[in-house]
Length: 250
Ligand SMILES: C[S@@+](CC[C@H](N)C(=O)[O-])C[C@H]1O[C@@H](n2cnc3c(N)ncnc32)[C@H](O)[C@@H]1O
Image 1 (cartoon, rainbow, N blue to C red):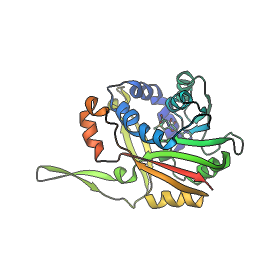
Image 2: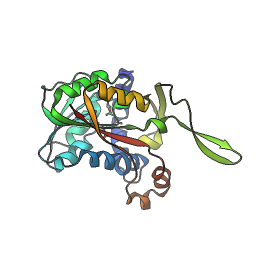
Image 3: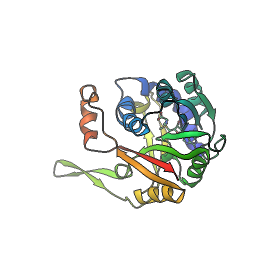
Image 4: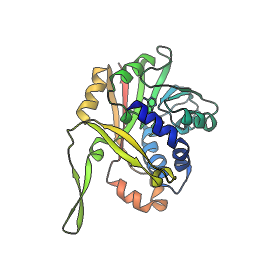
């Protein structure tokens, strides 16, 4: 599965970045107006902090965190995205690599963050133990994922009305979705896979790996997006597409 995910991001890397930057696009709304504000809020004041961004993608977080006074390193499995990250955030240091084998020293970072990357991993234990190793004592790990409840919600039609129904929630495993022109901006499409876990499994991984939970937030769109993205705003103001967790090394 790791190879498929790496291939998908190498194939779509450029389009993914373009779509993120295109201010009228759906990706811009879901990332910049919905996921990022929640995750940045939980990251808090990053001035002078040494931060590692795991699954850093095109380096958009690295650029923002550096602008706010942090010293950022980033790692990502996609060579294509690391090439983009080097241009997006030239003051940061990026490495092509797997999140399960972090090439950093013990206790190197104050904060580790990971936005929308863990969903691509089946077993989180190796990553959590690596992140614990590279964090300083009482270091913070902030990560976002697709909200498990939303991943398992489907649309049902009933007497001319459409309802959301949670289905198959306890069945953990891979969900495959097609990323097509709407998300990537390009004509071809690619299958991107996401591993669904229940909240119970996530909490257990956090606690079993020597972290405690400090905070949690379901995503809500920023008010200023209401004007440019009225449809998406209404859809997500009552539907927590993403969630961000803030945990601390014990
Ligand atoms: C949805 S993108 C998010 C990118 C970035 N965090 C952001 O929010 O802008 C997921 C990223 O995780 C990376 N990724 C997936 N599996 C990985 C792994 N095992 N190790 C490192 N990076 C990985 C992908 O290459 C991709 O850049």
